Length: 497
Image (tube, rainbow, N blue to C red; front, side):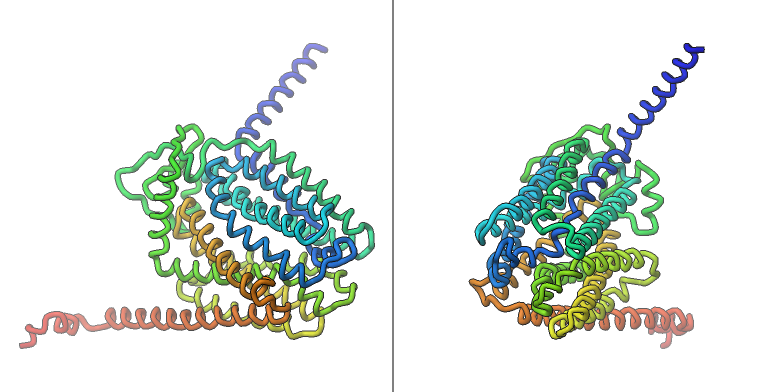
């Protein structure tokens, strides 16, 4: 009986080991690790209270120095490192950049905790710009290690976990501040512990053997060009691993040999894809809105805490920053999620929607700017953030349905780079002390006017698109209803003679 029992335990243990090996070899293992990393790297309870911390007794900086000298460094640095980090991420095959991102996040938090002075905080902003630029590695990694049919689930899990991390960080920060459970410094120490967990997790991520541009599987060309899958064909295609993933390319499997391409080959191919993608007028319009709106959104997010402090200069204003960030994240996620269940012809109504909702966003910004009530300012911020999340989701979906994964990554990077260039221009002219160095109220008047201009442009463009579509529909209906004899006589006028 003892022997049977030992044999049973051995067999059970073997089954468990085999199941564990299969799980680690599949898509669940890297996705789980990436989700753990995404959660612990985004739980930052200090973030909703960064301005009070920097301008309080811990750092003793003025609002003008933070706004006009420290924060602009992030914008300039982000622009400088974005393209090199984008190319380096693909060349190094993602995992090293994910680890590098977490190390820089740890360094950023440590500098914020232990260093003093304007120069030190400017260096901290540069380190955080590297963290932001390395964000591309987080989502690109999953596409290099997971099979095509699991892309949608893996992306959904990773995005959801990141949102949960941001929300949990805001709620945690709110509780710690509201009940005086931790000082800001101890709050940062807690953040360092959470980042350390993310760093250890990133070390266990499997190393991808291929990447989207530099290290690609050997291409297996078909006899003809394979058209891109549309939204209705995608679910069926995801179930077939041999379905084409791009123009003339078969879906890649880990067993295929990997071909490494030179930097010049990659840059030439990227330039060709760039020109071909933006030659499509509809994609160009969506991308222009993406770049313009993201620029204004980033400026608003970066300086909204300064506005809150201006509206409510007493120390009590910090009590609700974390709660507002948590609510805005949840509402923004709900609006973005709900748009997936709407049945709208975005090709016809999309531009009008962009214009109308951008106008509402401008109204929310003006409300935040001119109100003397902190609650109205909070409400305007929540509305503005929800509207942006809603519209950027529509724009991403419309662009993604027309492109392969490689080209979508290119357009994603190009649109964000364009937004960053615009943001750099606005920062250098409006915010930077070496430019106009405007106060927070004139800044937000400019941001509101900026979104008003976007609203007018896309509203007029949307009206034109609808009129054109309806006129085309009327012309086709008239042609179909025209009597055959009349059609013949119109096409063959000599028969009437």
